[in-house]
Length: 141
Image (cartoon, rainbow, N blue to C red; front, side, top):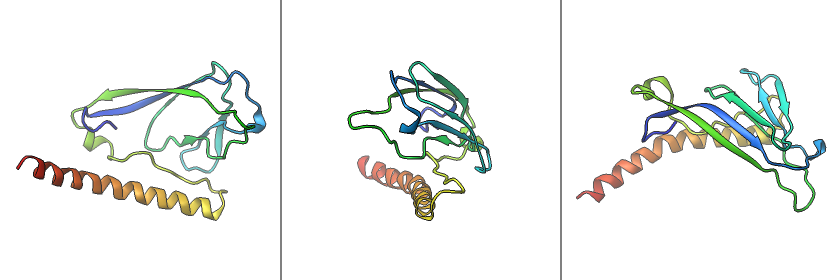
């Protein structure tokens, strides 16, 4: 969600820019079921492949496993987002940034890290507006 312009992200579009990509290098985009029980689709990041998907509060996606690329090889992509406007955006969508959700079969330390990141995001969403308001009052004295 773009707070200042009151816009909500609705679509993600990713174009992959990798001229060569081996499956064992990992880095496949994973699209997960709403309950995070299964990976529904894996998409290899090969040149000119375009993926478009709707962005909702529970459209879990990403490439959660570390890359296994040779030295000097990176995963390249371009991401574009489509937003829509809404006067009642704060009533429709909770104000949070990226939410990290572990997979059910992730190691306990990965699950702990995801919970920690999620809790930090929730705290930051609360803290930064309060800090911003405080600084704004001081700035205009």
